[in-house]
Length: 55
Image 1: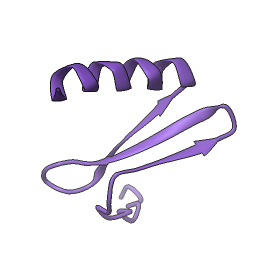
Image 2: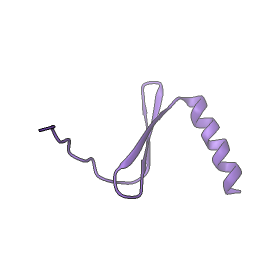
Image 3: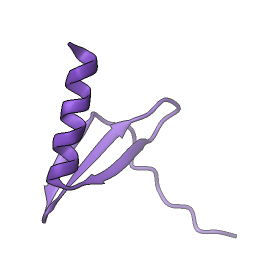
Image 4: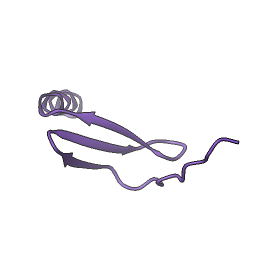
């Protein structure tokens, strides 16, 4: 039988810096969180894209 890993739970959206990377943890529907690793340039591009659609 496969080992089962404990779920980390939902939790709030958060971004933490680990070394040169930014780690984004985003809650998703149905439980759990989507974890994305970004560098600084990618984070800036994501910010610009989000600003375009939220204005």
